Length: 311
Image 1 (cartoon, rainbow, N blue to C red):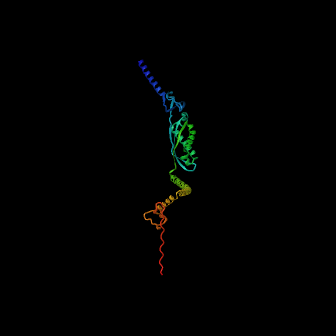
Image 2: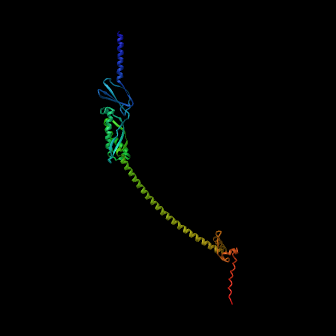
């Protein structure tokens, strides 16, 4: 009987030991960081951001508890906010942020959980957006300075989030639009401005084109005048050379020169099939028709007989 009681006691003791081991052991994964609390006070921090010590840990059962926080990046979707730009225009801004818990002890002491942290971060971000965007124009917010403005908002939020043990890793303005009530008026004004700019550009283009055409016409006139002057000079030089050559040819062989000139006269005077010449057959023009050597002279034309007179 004593043996049975001893066996039963050992079994119970073993069960109690297993229960104690189960209650005291806990694991911290790669994506988690943990706080070990003793009567509500933080005793130690495990696997904090910036360290890499996941694994199996132990705590004192019933006296100590463990709170786990995510070590990964967390998303914060912000509601649409209406902000006033520096040029007094209302803008609807949609944004989101990504953050991580870098100090779990401070996070636990200030907000304790993710839900409260998101509420505080939303408040910080909305205030920072209103403050930063109020110093920029609509065009700067939408186009020219958007990246710089987002960085300024992120820096301002981080200064406050540091007290919560949180770091904003990324903050983006996903949408910046005009409210629906005045979008149409703004679009119409933008269209009018663009049409005016287009008209100015067309007018300037027409003026430049007219200037270019006038310059081109002037250049063409100058070039044509210079070309005509050069042509006249060349033509005069050619005529002078021609006359000189003809004079030299006449001096060397007057008979051949006379023959050549007669052939040119025949060529020009007898052009066409119906050429008519009213000229005397004995004219010097037909000299080479009567004698190919050009020596014969046409007989003089006999004078007409004198009319008879009455006795």
